[in-house]
Amino acid sequence: LGRRMVAGAPGPRRVTRVTALVHGLVGVPLGAAIAALARTESASPTWSFGFPRPLALALVLITGLALAATVVNLALRGRGAPFALALTRHLAGDELYSVCRNPMVAAGLGLLLSVGLLLGSGALVAWTLVLAAPAMIAFLKLYEERELELRFGDAYRAYRARTPFLMPRLRR
Image (cartoon, rainbow, N blue to C red):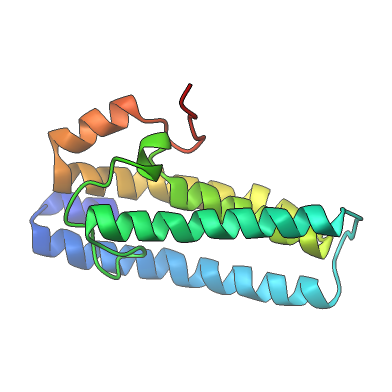
């Protein structure tokens, strides 16, 4: 629906409004579900398993820092903020965004998996892999890529052609 609303009249004001609406409709329920599941699982894990706590803690720290770094990278290079708080004014295609087009989502999913490992929660790990990851990927593919193409045109198409979607490509 958001994609159709943007395609109908792809002016900057409309794209900004529709993007804020779509991010709110997708992000708020997904974020609320993540918070509720994490709270429930921290109290009493479903499908609990053992995982080395120091390793899980290190993974939470690494993925949390990576997520924070993507937000800073987007703010400095794209002159915007995530979740349509302030749409980027420039295409952020360097630094972390040169490794993959969606490092924020990659780091966020990594953080969710790491928290699941830390809590020993098979339910949180499974929920991340079966529900959250496909929902985020569908959002990126069905809406965000088109929205970025409308805003940045050929520059985004060239960036999309040279940069992997979600799995980071490390430089040699």
